[in-house]
Length: 103
Length: 103
Image 1 (tube, each protein chain N blue to C red):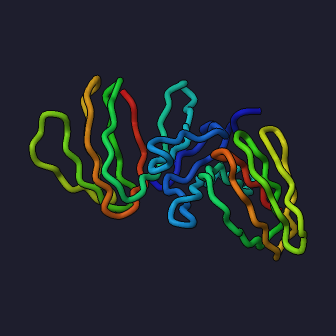
Image 2 (image 1 turned 60 degrees about the vertical axis):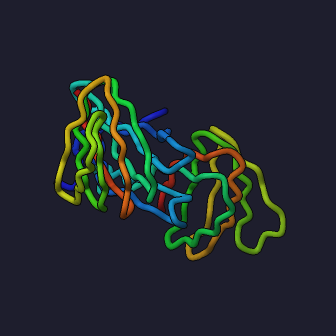
């Protein structure tokens, strides 16, 4: 599925790490939210509140979850889970297009 | 209005000028499209196909339309029109959040 239907989109985006990561918030009918975003080639560490599922739409990244010593590579069509109240280091090899699913 | 309701949003974003501009495409029930985007501090020149209305949601920019010699400053809540088959130079002073309305 390449798009979300019957949703709301916030006009103002979300900018992290001086623009290395930019996303927009999508609100669903049940009030739940996801973000659609882009990460430019970089190595960034994100903290999580709620658990997250990161869905890779396009591009390539290598991800090391908190406490892990080795990174795992993910490409388009693949998702990875990040526990809540944790963090993950993400090295973006090819500009990443992603969906972040919360909870 | 801070959001668009009852729309679709494409999961894959649009990346211009090595990420200085990132946007996401919003599709309306009538099939028309808009983009919600972010421009990082920079000076960029965009070409237009269809005429555009650029709505500034947040941030500050200075815009010089093709053929103009002086730039005009725009801030949140203000829009500017760009003719079709033309171009505009946009200097982003404070990270810009915008909506691009086509046609």
